[in-house]
Image (cartoon, rainbow, N blue to C red; front, side, top):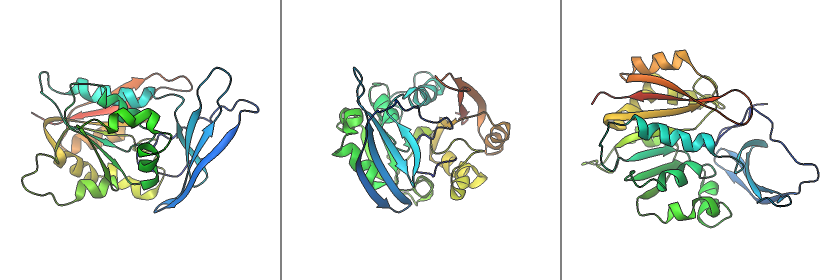
Length: 254
């Protein structure tokens, strides 16, 4: 069963393993603009920390058991930038459980770090709730700014002039299971020619668009080239269960 969408939250096509009799506690339940969102705590099991889960409209989205893909998404974007670029600015599409944000903030080479998240409940769980254990240090970092907005609307919004705080060296997206596997119909716009043009318009010359996906997509690679990106590549991310995840990388000409 495919779960419903929430900006930036990692969907897993693999069922979450539950330990028998592992206690699950609902910590918060809210009705948001895109349906119900729930924060749960699983465990702790003996000798292990608790695992926090985010559920949207009854469907599991992601948890804090493993943040490997989210971290490597940010690393791949940084590696793809031109050598020697000082204090690059990164836009992270979605806050989720905070792994991408925390990893970016732990890297001193990043300059400005902006996260766009459309669910206020998720932002609150990070600012004053249990997920502050993941993101608390990052949220206190003066480089970090959280924007409560739908990602595509944020990219399409008219910009104030001048715009040094609204363009980026890297955009990292973890919104869906991939460009060919969106979990809501309206998310397809992000990977359309219009959506890719909006991403490109926010990137500086030599900038990188990095898109997480549960599987490679030759069609999306071609769409990136047609949108004016060069150096289109796909990197595999080995995960604990199932086939490798991938990150699609696309670079603007410098």
